[in-house]
Image 1 (cartoon, rainbow, N blue to C red):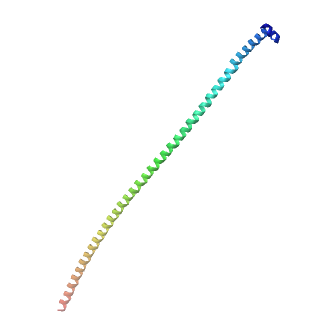
Image 2 (image 1 turned 90 degrees about the horizontal axis):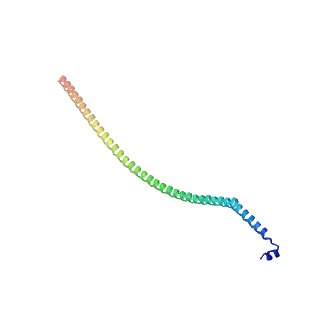
Image 3 (image 1 turned 120 degrees about the horizontal axis):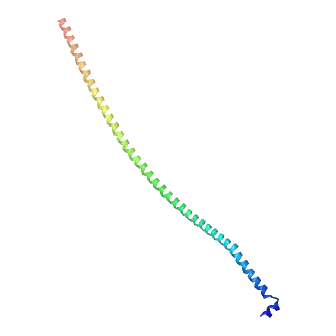
Length: 147
């Protein structure tokens, strides 16, 4: 085999030395260059994957927040409608109560006015009777003076 290698001009001790040099260079490059580069790439891959996962979670949280907001909004609208309906009912009840109170006051004022008018009428009648009695006495006195 040595003759074959010599025929091609290959020297075995140089070939072995080059193989050893290549192995040393390969080991040094693999240890000091390939491993750190692969470690950095792996870390970046993890960071990118975490960023993608965080973005998915944020998107899901945003979607949930939107749904929650719409549910809360619908609940608030329903509650507001209920409050407005109760306020209308209470306003109607209050209006009816005020109308009844006003009617009761008006009836009271009317009765009071009728009572005052009746008292005034009776007072005027008494005064008229007194006046008639006085005039009758005066007429009788005058008639007696003549007679």
